[in-house]
Length: 217
Image 1: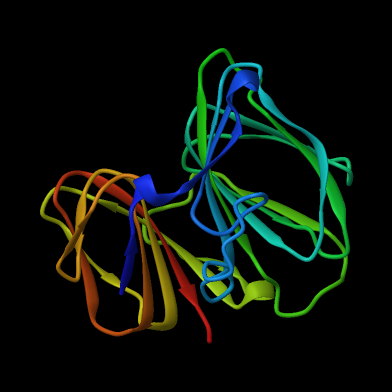
Image 2: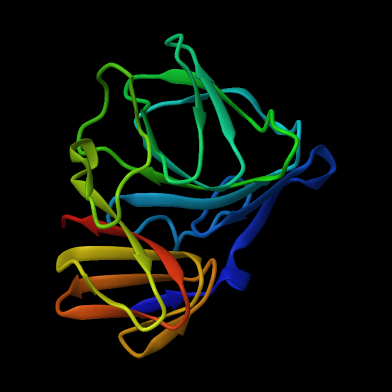
């Protein structure tokens, strides 16, 4: 198990424009050849947008993009004509496939915080696709078959335990609270990369929320 702390993330974004980004993997100008991906995960970005701030229209291709809003509301529009409002508890997935353009903004009058995870597809190309699951239930898995991946949302009370899926690769991101994971204590923004996970358990040291990726080899 490889624990990566929140303070070790690469800082990006544009603070003057109200955008603060924290990157867990090599990203943009923060190139690190030893930190390109873990299983299918190629990015895990924590984004903070001030009211009125956002990412203007930009392209993506050959990427599965999954977004989890922590607080606030995210406005999304893309070149397929879709427009949606994503709130805490919703899972949003944009399958960029052969190519798509989109806009992400904070059109609300309160700060927006979200975690966005990029996964490499098993096969390139295809047609773009979009999906939102509103208010996903705790422990309900969300499949991203295009990347051979499954997302598990875990919300723990203090002292509550949960099993981490056995998998070739497991990526655990702490959204909020503190947990003990296989003997290591993790706080908000910390992550663990587990290879060949088996019988691993997470325990809430406080109330906590986790995003757990179950990834094939």
